[in-house]
Length: 202
Ligand code: ATP
Image (cartoon, rainbow, N blue to C red; front, side, top):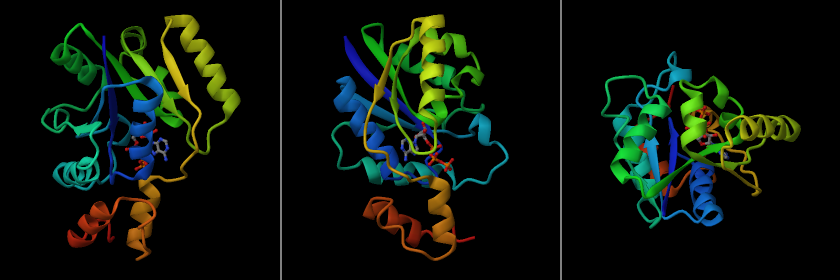
């Protein structure tokens, strides 16, 4: 059985927290590959201004360029509709075929809200999960969600216990707007892209 990881997000911009999450998932869950998929319109962030899909994709491609385990997919950017995870996973399962098990990778913050996602039941019944800890969540809240979900759906959930990286894209956009350096937070190629394209300045 082939194991493919799927890591969705807005990646506005991609940062070391995302890359570490993908690489940890490869090691911990024995994945063959992780596909990072930037969302066109993210259901919970519809009211927000993004860098363009093209810029977010380009930054991901630069960040993943040297990594043998990560590929970047344009699938959601090419859809007309809101980027619902269940639609993307349906498509990916069809693309990779029945011999592939899909592992959806998220940070704890996203996983805690998964019950509220569109077609949560389908998501939790059909796919496995790899969860990376992220600062700012409560361990007891996570354990409670995990118990509820695994007992209701029998979902396979791999919880990774890794060093937490306190990085968010929100914080990076703010720092760029304030003219602060972001070298410790994103790969050098991404830092250069943001600078050369004048992203997030206001
Ligand atoms: P924003 O600050 O704009 O909301 P973000 O930094 O949370 O963005 P997303 O693109 O929303 O980034 O995240 C995509 C996925 O990566 C989510 O599952 C999220 O939980 C996870 N993730 C993001 N940053 C980290 C981090 N520092 N550690 C672990 N997981 C992370």
